[in-house]
Image (cartoon, rainbow, N blue to C red):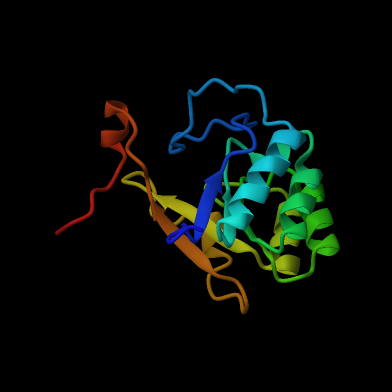
Length: 178
């Protein structure tokens, strides 16, 4: 038996993305073939057996995986918690998941970094109150689109520091101070 297991793991169902965010730590990575469902079932079974309690799902854009709904089904069948980090571009998929899995296992975090967001995404944000995230940089601290949601009852906001992946990032990133 395992004496220690991580509380959570990060899982990248796909590295494909439909946006080109300048702050993304996965930008420029070529999208490989997505994990197939058979392999995913094996991995989830193993991590569940060793005591992992939560999956932190990132990408690329996780909702672009062709079997995204099946992935959610498999994770929920093991009673694991899921945090899905998304750019919010596939609102219909997010709404389907939130309406089908109102079980307290799923948390959605939506990145709000652009100057405009769609009406569908705005409606989703007010209806489901996901986590709102934006990236702090020298160019922008809290985007105006994100400010609209500060103080909305039941909605949490996270301001994230930009990952510095390459030398070009240094011009925009804000270092932690001692």
